[in-house]
Length: 130
Image (cartoon, rainbow, N blue to C red; front, top):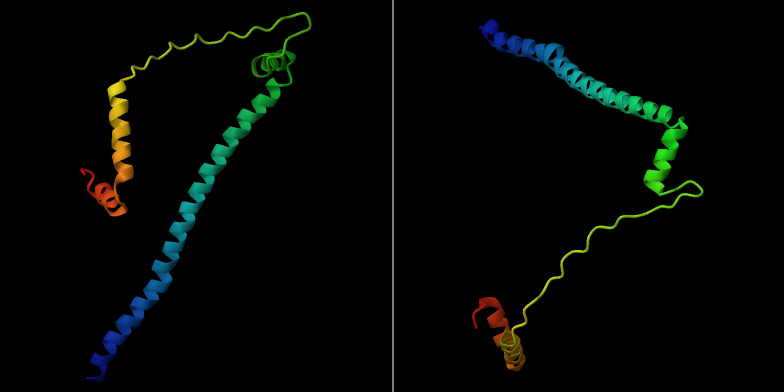
């Protein structure tokens, strides 16, 4: 009888031991593996950016590239040259049609709003149709 009471306790102890020996370290290992993969991806992106920047540094050692950038970005010219800027075509003017009746109706509605009491203004704001 005493052995039957000990069997569940031994099984429980074995399960807890398996958790500590296998499951918890496995979860930690998987998390570290995922962090390593993310760090490797970040490293790859940084290496690509370094290659781009290194090629840019090499290009900026050339006088022709410096002149191209000075002309393009800063609108600089050599002595004796003239710089011209081509502006976009002006947009077509817009015309608005003025309706004097609509203006009169709007003024009349504004005058009506001014004559009403505060509770009726609140009611009309809440209902929207008075």
